[in-house]
Image 1 (cartoon, rainbow over the protein chains, first blue to last red):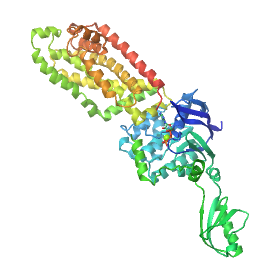
Image 2: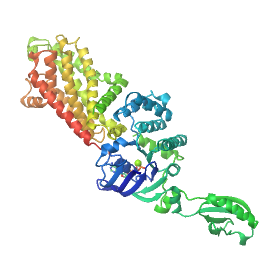
Image 3: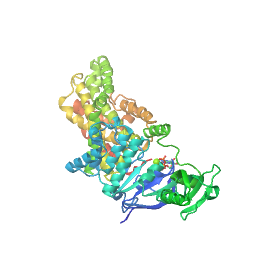
Length: 328
Length: 257
Ligand SMILES: Nc1ncnc2c1ncn2[C@@H]1O[C@H](COP(=O)(O)OP(=O)(O)OP(=O)(O)O)[C@@H](O)[C@H]1O
Ligand SMILES: [Mg+2]
């Protein structure tokens, strides 16, 4: 079995409202797959269907080889999940939360204790293991949830907005854990996020979801190609007629009103050395270089006419509001 | 099934230990009833005429099993309904997504809650003995057994109710509408025999009546009880089985959102 998740025409309605409008995708074993989309896109709804917590209205989903409707127990045995909203017992300690999880997943004795110790150390919470969770910061709670989700060694791990509302250092930390999990355990990871950088940094493939529909899917590179080429901006010391450089890797050239030259290339990072050589050959001096690569935000903008980011970690107010919602 | 059951019972007991002073402090309310209501009226009823009405015992002795049953009833119902907090704080999702028997999980929770409730009930009983002169010491453990049946029934009922509710709003209403009238209609505070006919009818269908009566059997004696012990225990057992069964079915079907 090389496909960890297969979803076909999945539909989920809440009453009359269609939150997921027929999505289809496949996730290969050992892959990190990201659902990138704005608030209300249907990410969490999809995750809850895939983790057997909601019944789909129509369509089919197979996770870790088992149908989520036909064999929910078989699916539950093979998955782990970090929910978007907190799901810890705040009155209990980190250790007790881990212990309860281990027990209801059928682990016990020394095996359980060893795994708990290893994971609590992995997420750097070992020294806080006997503190009640209600005294933990948001980032600590998130790390504990990640450790807990790994305790029973799931084949497929679902992470619903794993870094929402966290500060940049903590986010980077959590990204490290996620990468380590993939590398060490060849775990399949289904991630949802509305942070473009997160999808880009972590995911092998990304599906962009909006209003319950997948509007584009592919690697980050492939998605960016949807918008167009990279653009290199040059400030040159050269006669006007020589400014538009010719070269096989150059897709287009325009002299901007401010005198700068805009070159379209497929991949700016790879094109730059060639460009310097070319300029050298022609005796043109390059005074300044900048380049713009399309971002996933450009992709989203291109496909929907809207920005994906209504908030970001750099916008503390938005995160603050969000955290308060999380703690509701 | 067993794993889920013992783990969830463990969780409820852990939570109790963490918050023991708060949880045990909840017996303040029944204690106020016992002291200010019970002790207050006991002087008024300190005459042969009144003693006859209360089955030949002093008022505090009559009242004590009633306050015990009321405590267990209130506390177990509150404990059951607190599933709503698991819904709100998200822990419920963790349980629902686990590959464990859901029936086992919720049964474990109800058992755990009932054990905690018994601790509260035991405290009330211990504090009652010095006040009520003719309570039987030998009735202590059997009375706790009656309390356990009652507690299983109402934790189960609380769980089913909480699974249907979206928030704590409206819950206050349910508490008000349910708790005090059921207590008054149980024969805990005054005998059923002297109630007006319509009240008597309600008392007969009130499950709490049988817990109060069962506790009286053990703590005071058959002479003050209204029904036979078999009837009391039978009603409570059937009720507990039904309500716990309902909670287990409801939990099996539970989804989120
Ligand atoms: N229980 C529910 N009942 C009714 N509508 C719901 C329910 N849950 C979600 N919705 C609606 O379904 C849509 C998709 O919600 P969902 O939570 O799946 O989005 P999301 O992509 O996870 O968004 P976010 O980034 O805010 O978490 C939203 O419009 C939301 O309002
Ligand atoms: Mg979501």
